[in-house]
Length: 156
Image (cartoon, rainbow, N blue to C red; front, side, top):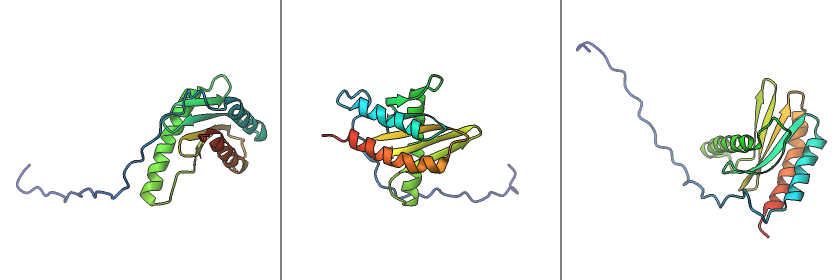
């Protein structure tokens, strides 16, 4: 650089004031005390109630699979991990904007949808839908399913 070069001022990073990270409870994956038949019924009924739902997964916020109702061709472990990543981003957005707890996030793709719903503080319901799915109907039916699943996952 010559002595005639000018330097642009550098922007200094602002240190955000964020709450401390939330400590997560132990994973629900593989917990033998969970009512798997009742959970499976809820997932299956969601697919039957809403045309275009290709499958659903219940996973922990840690990204580990709890159980699923997906056909061959969809990897439930991948869906659980993607739901956790979606949750992580959504949680950071809600913290940064001060808008409260994460509730739901939807990703629209060229050929379908991927929606993630909070199931209490420890689990996530993710739903894969075809492009023709009625998203409003999904958003109407999935939150009550998430609430019922949260009750099923609650410690006795």
